[in-house]
Length: 67
Image (cartoon, rainbow, N blue to C red):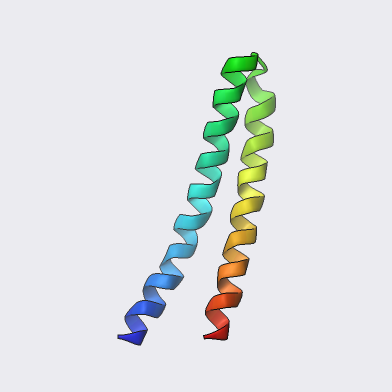
């Protein structure tokens, strides 16, 4: 049972990263449509989403390694 939990925890790392990027991209596109600054905010919020995803994945890996 523990092996299944470890596999599911490890497989969620990619999902966490992709979800962070998609949320950042969505916020950027939404704000670009409102303010008319087409690529600027999309790029900025996508980068923020990527950095947030990387940070969260590393934090989860550290937590995973302690177990």
